[in-house]
Image (cartoon, rainbow, N blue to C red; front, side, top):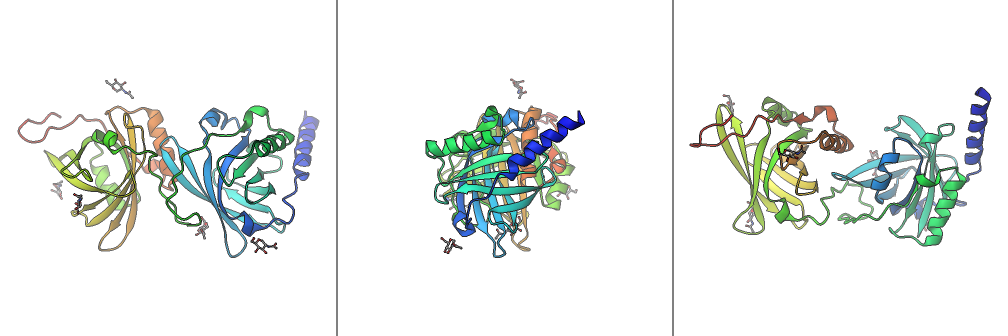
Length: 357
Ligand SMILES: *[C@@H]1O[C@H](CO)[C@@H](O)[C@H](O)[C@H]1NC(C)=O
Ligand SMILES: *[C@@H]1O[C@H](CO)[C@@H](O)[C@H](O)[C@H]1NC(C)=O
Ligand SMILES: *[C@@H]1O[C@H](CO)[C@@H](O)[C@H](O)[C@H]1NC(C)=O
Ligand SMILES: *[C@@H]1O[C@H](CO)[C@@H](O)[C@H](O)[C@H]1NC(C)=O
Ligand SMILES: *[C@@H]1O[C@H](CO)[C@@H](O)[C@H](O)[C@H]1NC(C)=O
């Protein structure tokens, strides 16, 4: 038993030992925008997500010290999330190490083969832990020549990846609004955002914020409440009317949102808190859920905070939706444990109609 384990490990080590980085690797030519158009990843944990994978987009920025930041945008069920990976250079050009927070370990990255203007074949590995090894095929565009795809598949097979773990995900509709080398994260809104379908009644079912006052305020009244979005006067603006039960009465509060040139992005001002708020609908299917990310800036202190809100068309939500929401929140660097999940205590009815609690 022991012997066979040792043999397996040696084979793995040998497979990787054969892998050399691109000859005369030139990091400045490797910089810029790439799409991950192929992925070989043989992890049991990842297997259920194989057919959900879409091509993600990354921007490689070379830092003055020769290290590299890879900023990746990944489409998730609830919208697009951005993550920055820092690759530390080694004494071998084309070889980097990085610390994976997800797996809590250092990994090696080797740019195995690239012609810089079309494709790059990248091996991510940790010797002796094959389950975390990946081969990625990056393309300067989302569609690559068949000969390049075949080269990627052959390389992954040579690294003993099972055929079913070698994927070429379909392209995603990327609409990048920043310069390719802009290190600022871009908040991606729902693709083909349809304002008309977004209007109507929603319930705020969960919320989280990096602002302690917001969290304090929310946690005092963790109740689901309806918000009605409505076009007003001009087609270019809409109102949001929230009906909330506070201090023994049922109140309606209306805010006015202005549209921007970016579909799914709105501005509004909250005079009560003296805050300017930039809202992004990061994901919605219009019929069930919507996730709104808000960047809020306090006019006086200039302090910024991020709020992430989950809206649902119904007061009952599935735990799968809450799990997806939690994942999205964590990918924005906010602990999922701080999410306030609103309780369903029924709706209140404002004025005259009597209170239905
Ligand atoms: C790397 O590529 C850049 C940009 O094409 C070029 O200016 C530079 O001379 C190259 N460096 C080497 C060592 O070839
Ligand atoms: C590179 O990434 C690190 C860690 O995320 C970040 O602190 C730094 O500002 C980034 N630098 C650039 C130039 O993007
Ligand atoms: C509710 O009452 C508290 C204390 O009486 C007050 O500070 C708060 O502003 C009131 N909230 C609303 C929404 O009226
Ligand atoms: C939309 O609302 C903003 C702020 O309330 C206002 O300044 C702007 O004039 C409105 N735009 C239109 C087209 O009504
Ligand atoms: C929520 O409740 C409605 C009506 O009771 C039901 O039709 C719907 O399937 C439920 N949705 C979920 C996600 O449980």
